[in-house]
Length: 448
Image (cartoon, rainbow, N blue to C red; front, side):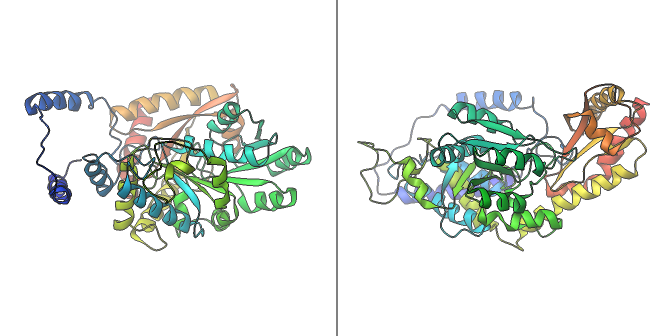
């Protein structure tokens, strides 16, 4: 978990930082080191009450440890504590953020997108849907029922009509239902989810774009979870086809604090048309006086934002460039292959039943049982037993028909069924499948 050499790197970087301010009169803030040390020991003690998110045996929710360079760069920047609202508050970090936005846009074939970092995917999606509402006032926004729940909530906040598009049992968008909604003539924007949080499904973007062009409506790609997989080389053909059309959408959300190896919170919104910046225009009598350059606060709904997020992301891009064929891209392939191998091992199990084939690195599976009620009870028991062996999973509630699509012999005695879900988003997961399966099978035997 802790590499002492990292602290040496941070100390050397802090000395380098301090050397840039030697022309100032000497000033060292007073710090009661003993009191700080005492509090930090308490903090460390309290932090024991966490799951081991950093360890490969944590195969539950979407929690990927930040890269050491991101963690160190973030910490280093806090000695300055820049604010990326205006250039006055974050000169270097604002420049770093602008460079990162170009690099993130380049991943999708955009040379000069309008965009900025946000506190996370929710705020980024809010801005994208806000712009959609301004461009198509009164028009409906539609998204898959497997899309993140915040889309419906954001539309409620913005006063925009919202409708969920039905999904097939495998989690993919029902295009016939989308056609029905488009026939109504009141849809202004379709949200295509590029990596759902439940199954990791990728919506059929080529089909969505074809319909959007005919109907003259916008397409927003919510790639908060799956965006970085555009760099992967091991995607299935249908999934690759979706990523290859990302350049044609109107806006994109991507979360560097998921697969981008960043600390929370670091989201990002990108717009293909820089002219969308006109909707952000506002006046501030005291913030934007030091430079004629564009301040990030002029293209953002958020005001104060941590420059530390930009510094950490910029440092990560220097060490691990987000480009095809890079070490970063290869690590994404390891995650894809780990998920496929994990599903194959589940398929060979007599006790566990995998469901849909993963588009990305999320695997959903059930515990064998005669009926859905028993399957739910066993999944919850297995979740608890595995955690006692330091294997941490996640639970997901699904319609019973979804399970029966993959296990028709399991009788439906309930409307929903609880299944297990594993997010294999650490490259190391590929090397830990043996102990993961051993713990799972041992715990299932205890259930029997």
